[in-house]
Length: 181
Image (cartoon, rainbow, N blue to C red; front, side):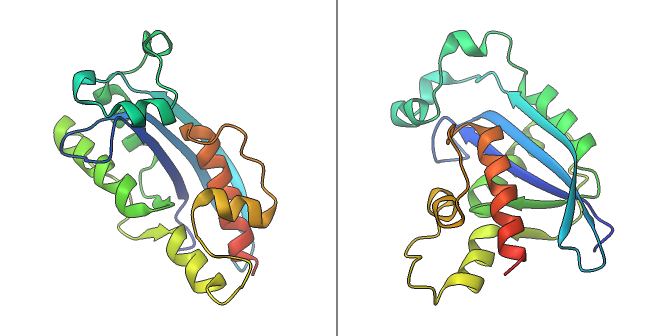
């Protein structure tokens, strides 16, 4: 599996239910593992998509507020089909990595089904919450495993939290720190 790239992914959505809500931002940091132990990394590419919501009326107002949704910033947004096609091409044979993977992957999987775009990623997935728990559960300085808390613990700045690309970059930095433990 060392030969497979890692696709660090984060999404922002109009709510918490993948059957009712939509992806409004999608970001990927595509990384190659280097070195003999797979603990060195090279960023190959970063992708960020604003995705035009089709059913904004179904959005949870609190989610839109947290994610900084402003209709004027989404005027030139991609359609879901455009974003997922590009995502599929760029993440071909990569391993999906996310923080709270169940949430992000449920929306991504729904997007693949809705658009009919094939999911070309390699089958394993990595959830950084699980990795963090496995490596830090006994650490008295860690009481929660949210991305924000792990960033604080590792001294990682994430000034634009809840924007997909900023969170994806922070996720990659957290992953590197976790792998060095």
